[in-house]
Image (cartoon, rainbow, N blue to C red):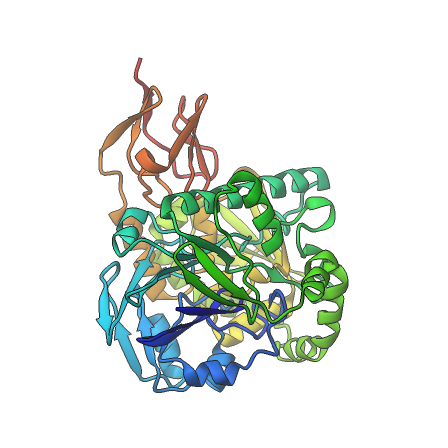
Length: 512
């Protein structure tokens, strides 16, 4: 097996039984905010698109689903490995690009094609990408590969039953806007970013320990930011206020924590050939070029940014003009109020009005009243502020997932009173009746099943109220605080209150 890194989560996997092209991303995503790091624009994308036998797109986030690259460079008769998501949006998007040959998989069920065993583990919770994320397992008879990318599967034991993993590609860097966009004192932002970076590392390490792969490759990140407005978010940002750890930073931290792990640097164009305990690694960069990329990152990124100015200018020119206030309000009322009418659990979970400042126009999404209206001066626990052209563009394109367009762009600011509210952000990623119906039904099906476990002197419900992780495996207790280590959600066991987000309290009592 030969694996060529294509940048970010992109892989070209060659085996004697066929080759797989995974998440080929090169064009900037999220309103021109995210670019792959390092630069992968000079790879021969047409070659990979012609040579591959299979295409695997893990989910619809645009740093994985690059519509322009797929349209231009990937042959349309390729066999698409399709995860078993709850909606068929990924298949519809690929069909619209001209793809016609789909291999529908069942979640966690291996399938064999011409000597290549394939398994896709599909995740379908509201917190999993845009209504779905997935991981890919491959076995060519000699080597077992796990490409986890952004997915956070609960049952690693089931994945390991597919075969002992030789090559493991794991997400390690940030893929969220927190805390960078929040209006916080720099000292608080620095502290929250440090916690987030450590949480990302701890999660990656737990997966590495659970998978027990012979070789580990940090993958699926980080992005870089080439627009002057966002440039200071690169890396760990000004004074450590950002979360985007790079490949070498992660490898160094992993080396200190677990020196026995065989971990390797995978860059765009790097070819890895894992074989038992050995792994041949061939970089297309010289040592001095790698030193420049990582040791002189700011200068490298400024050079990259200069090359990409025409791309950034074209993206800005593609945006829709700001809408007049009356039309803006009318468009959002017509679109969102029918969704709010159906969104019982989301509306109850948000529990109050949220303010959306669109340029100079303050709008309120009144979740209890199921209404979109102009702000009337009332106190709102949650406020998002962004530019009018971005909202107009989302309206013009009927973007059903503003997490996948506006929020991940980090071209907004946010403030809140109290903890993070999952339901608010779920609403912004479910702006279609299909998605609202799915999420509401998902929440209905996830009610506490009544099972309890005993953990370090506490009797607690077995399933995490967030995404139903088994706390017998993922729960850690320090004092009176339980942390679900899968996503970092925290609970005060003395009261049962969720410390991470309202509306997710836990059942708990001391055993003595």
